Amino acid sequence: FIEEFNRVSYKNYEANGDDFWGPLVILCNRAYFRPEEPELQVIYEDFSDKAKESYYGQILKGQLYPPTLVGNALPDMNAIDKNGVQQSLKELCKGNKYVIIDFWASWCGPCRRSIPALKEFYAKYAPKGVEIIGISIDKREADWQKALEQELLPWPNILDVEYVNGTKFYVKSIPTMLVVDENGVVQSNKFHDQEERAKWCEIFDKL
Image (cartoon, rainbow, N blue to C red; front, side):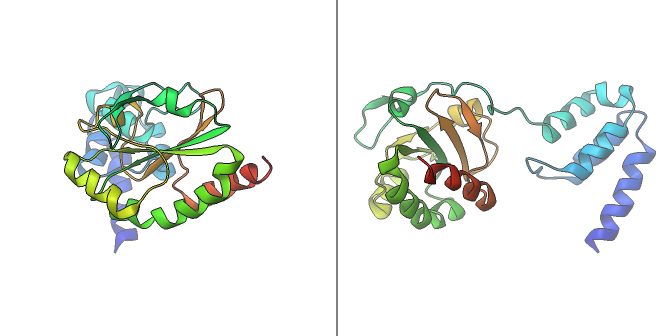
C-alpha cells in the first residue's frame, strides 16, 4: 500500500512541477521530513525554477536541505548545570580531543534507551580524551533533575529550557549527537546513528 501511495503521489508531484502546486503537494503529504530524503530531493530538483522559487518551494527546500553545522565552528551557549551554575559550552569542550554533544530529554524514549551504550562508550573513550556533554531540552527542570538522578550520567549536563540552543544548533529531533574536534569544528551531526558511530569509534580507537 505504501509503495503504491508513493508511486501515485510522485506522479502528482511531477504533474504539478511547473508551479507552486508541486512543492505544496509534497508538504501536504508529509508530517515529518527525515534529514536526508534522496527520492524527494530528486523530485524537487526536477521542478521548474518558478516552482523552486515559490513560497512553498522555498519551504520545501528548507526541509529537504536543512542547514547544518558540519564543517563549521560550534556555537557557544550558556546554560545551567544540575547545581544551577551557568556553564559555557565552549569552556566545557576545552582540553578534549573530541566532544560528543548529546541533545536529549527525560521524556525521549530512544534517548533514555541509548544511555547504557553511551556509558560503555564513555568508560572506554573518556580516558583517550573523548568527552560527552549532554544538553537537555526538557521544559521542566524538575523532570531533567529526576532523570539525572535515575540515570547517574558521568558526563557534564546542561539544560536548555527554551530549546533556543536546539534551534541554534539546527537540531530538528532528538536524539541528535554532534561530533566536535579539538579545534571546535563540528565534524558530524549523526553520531546517534549506529553505522556513523562505528566509523567514529574506529577513529577514537587510534587515539
